[in-house]
Length: 238
Image 1 (cartoon, rainbow, N blue to C red):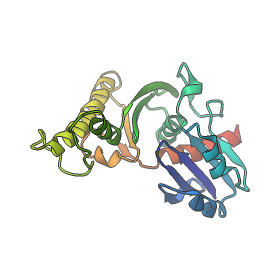
Image 2: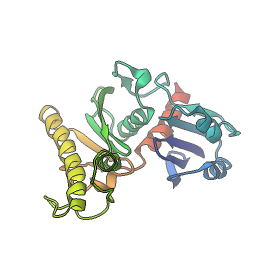
Image 3: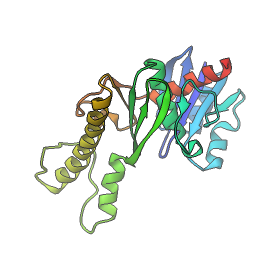
């Protein structure tokens, strides 16, 4: 059994893997969850986008099993084409590896919709070419509320008509439909060059877009965790 941790911007996702299969996944995991799961594990792998070393130390520092941290220097089944690999978010890299293990030797577009939305491209010859980062849905809604005089904070869940009929639906539709158009734009432009492009959708807000974007071949909420588990195995065999 392996403990796998994705320490994100706003939450920690933890999973127990048994021979490559997740048998338990806890979102918004806290220290108690991680220590409980660690009792069943004989190894741990994690990635973190946070600079808070105290938090990371609290989560993994006392584990009594071998711990691997994913970095840009880890052994990987794909190559990093990013010009500044030391600044690359390791969750982005883990998601790319997860997609590659599911469908190697294909052109892949990996969309991770969370606090931030990342859109990353992996070429069929196994290169993480790069990608783009923009604000996620909750962040866009919060920014409209905090940086204007009268716009309210609205929930993400609710109706999204083509054109809002009140302020709440205008904000929600503007954010979600705007992101759908953003994602569809990437898909259209890449498919002109790579007709057999495969689309992967993941992240905490992926359900908002799964049935809205033009094409999502694979909606996999645990893609980062899957990638981390595969990276641990790959690193140990190299």
